[in-house]
Length: 179
Image (cartoon, rainbow, N blue to C red):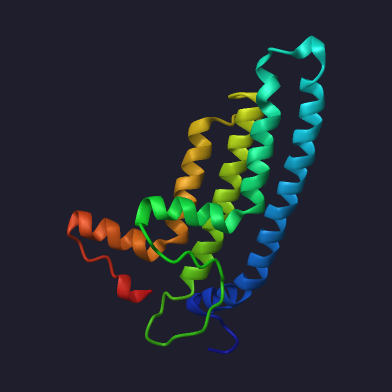
């Protein structure tokens, strides 16, 4: 091949790097949790102002504090949402990967898990923005967009189970054994 890399080799290299990227994403989620927590205290001090009592923003600090807790407990948050869709499945958020000759698309699993976790984080950020500032207040964020990102992220984290579910509903064989 004279130094050329195939698509599967590129996927293999990305999947091997996914564990380091996953640690960075988890650290980002914790950092966002801290930012949301500090922001909720700032919103609480604004809500304590007597001139703003009774306004819609008076409960925004509670929403912000709730979403900061969800960010701090991101693996538990994803596991809770996953149990709603798939029952008792293992929500392993490790992105470790070992090469396999029999399963050529195996490198896609840690990559899709990583994309799914990022989508859940983005969905939580969108929902927090909607709760604090209202629909369309910031960058066209809506409740539907946030919920869609969370559901899609959880389905990506459990790609094998998602394909199995779609296959059993439609009666099609979707090649789950390739993963």
